[in-house]
Image 1 (cartoon, rainbow, N blue to C red):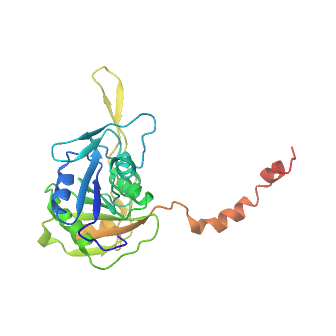
Image 2: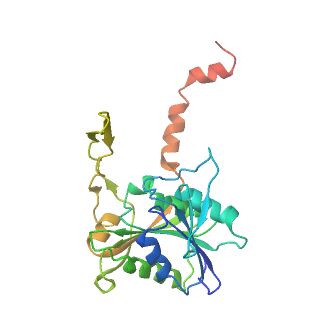
Amino acid sequence: MESLVESTVRILLSNDDGVHSPGLLALYEGLKGIGELEVVAPDRDHSGASNSLTLNRPLTVEEHPNGFQSIDGTPTDCVHLAVNGLFDKPFDRVVSGINTHANLGDDIIYSGTVAAATEGRHLGLPAIAVSLVNDGHYHYETAARVVRMLLENRLALSLGPRSILNVNVPDLPWEQLQGIRVTRLGHRERAEGAVPMTCPRGKKRYWIGAAGEGGDAGPGTDFHAVRQGYVSITPVHIDMTRHEAMPALREWAEGLDALGGHNDGDA
């Protein structure tokens, strides 16, 4: 959110739960009046799609009676196509969500919700991914109100290049939220084992096991904040280089004499 939100701002809304998701509708309703809203989302649930982009076939766009548009592709496809082809007017920012479940810690590696936001960022737009830490009450309106509050903040925010905000909102009524915490990503324990099953044709199949609980989930993490009733806001930088490891890696790589000899023409 590098600049103030004005009445003329154009916001692209997307998600990974699909165009018919109640979270997406709640986000749209909650942001009405804040600017021009356009919705482009997958035609079905693409949870766990991460940043996959469809390159082996053309994509189909369908417009729905409520004005939303759906694409038979991934969340990344939706944002990419919306920004680079579907509209004549440019967008000012992207908001992805409201995801039906949390995107905490390692979840962001797999999350299509976060992927939609990062695609917006890759295309030069400030972006927010927002998820509901669902415990069965489905307070989407609370998460939508949080997003509106963030967008209406009159203080400019500069996150730098390739950065988004990952927001997780406890599944509580608005008045029960404890506040906002700026957090780092925690880490989950190892996922549960794959669950075998037999299909009606007698062949063995597997369900991916459930995600692990928070292992690194102490104070300062996104896990801890939402458990305490706080909205978690984490700045996520999409640069996977581990910069602090580079000096040791360079020193280690200097010992790879065989490759150096090969480059010099030695056998």
